[in-house]
Length: 164
Image (cartoon, rainbow, N blue to C red; front, side, top):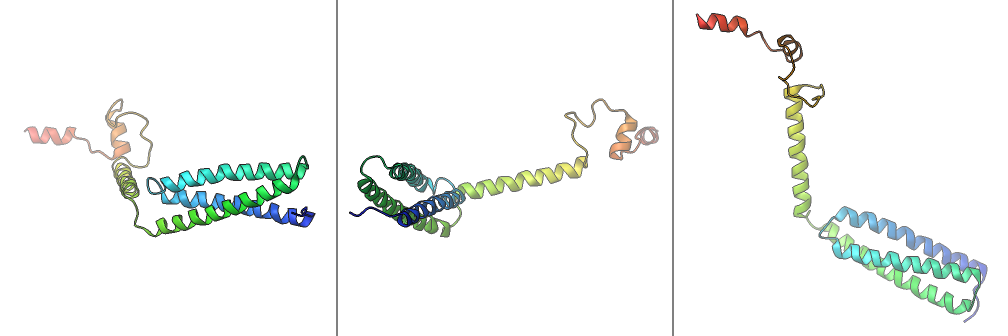
């Protein structure tokens, strides 16, 4: 095998950076799929990340120039081809899973978010825009404060007329 020149080393470095960028994009895509559907893909992606770190380490060792560079470059190229093939396989599987219906976990989370939002809107409607202040509405308030804050009517006049 012939020794690689500087332009070929730059091309190899560019391919390694491209593989790293694809791994980052795959991570985002797999995160969007969610668990448990993407569990196997997550495991495969983690294995790819380990292989990518080994690829970077081997490539850095070839640049230092210690030992047999031709054999190391051959290993780097082989590992790079393997990573690219596995990336495309994981990417294909992720695209397939993206086409499916949302999982029950996603649907449950969305329903929970809607319920929490509805409760929040209801609480805002009942209590208004002021903060809760970690206390009950009716504790430690005078009648005048309750009337001014919540618009309550004085009940004293109503009670005296209803008692008679």
